[in-house]
Image 1 (cartoon, rainbow, N blue to C red):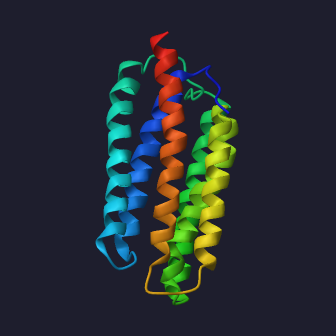
Image 2: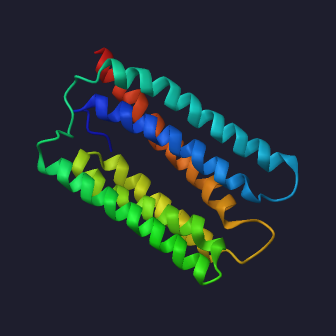
Length: 184
């Protein structure tokens, strides 16, 4: 599930996934079910994401000169740029489409689906199967959130409530493995 060849990449993945958990738990605050409990759960998920990023970022910076799967003169770098460009264009296009179609409730699931799908090719670029696991899981969450019957609870709530823990689990695995290898 984890390739230990590039521990700095693992730590950087943990940083990115920590920020993503924070962002998705924040978006989930858009319109959660009534009551303070769900807001507290989302706040805890967001704080865990910030904590993971706070642990990972300094380690990634300290080990920035360590080997990485992402060299700027490589084909992997070009694939990465293409995948991210497609992701950004797809997110913008789908958000515009959802607004025009009067389905702004689908923006969060559509964005989460694109984010999940983009991790599938990136798993190959970085040689990290855990990215494929996270991408597949996030895509399933997005599809389920899009299919949940309309209610007073925003679809973004389901995306964040389940998506944030996926980011935290995958990021936590990357952080622990990456730090262990960097200290070895």
